[in-house]
Length: 305
Image (tube, rainbow, N blue to C red; front, side, top):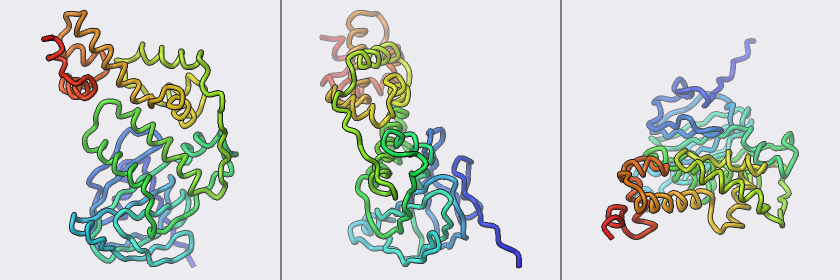
């Protein structure tokens, strides 16, 4: 007897699941390191047995506000790592499908859902300070429970995909490390032991990082670059920076950009549009929105004072 070959979905490739699903995704991320998001709207369907090269989190979405308020659930079955279960599938329920695990499912009605694909290497990098990377193994999870933190990450990533604003790479990096440590803590067979890092960042390291930020405000600063200066995993750097500075690196960078913009507005002949580019904002309107939010007035109003 011939053995049927199991299909493989690799979200590192464009349109990875198109051949297995009735319709292509309606939204798809590009260029996010270690992370990929797809948003689907599908009719009633059944997907054949397949495996993923990346870890997958699937999250169901309500078709309408009425469905969200009524908490109606869609039913269907999932075969996950050799086990079959009838799932609850309320809006916001998540399924966890580790890389390399055989999987198939069906839906008894039309559905909207999101798929977040995560490189196994991300968990290894974030978890290297806590546990042997060879022992990091995700636990499969059927779509019958909610996770508020993961729902929030899905929502923010989708918003980023739809709107795309300044500091996108830094924001994605922040959520990447938050998601990775959450998975390590709550969805892994081996629980990591967290280090306290009681001494925090040294003043010398903090100075190196802040000087780098000041010198590169016009660029798209990434959390991975800043953590590399500190020679820490992105998660530890994010945690220790906030512990020491009272704000996240993303918030610190935004504050420094606004301070530099204020200085240039008062002490240069540059236009507001030119200042926006020099301080790392997408354009003049983006600078104006952030400036008013933090300072309380627009750049134009500051020039008139």
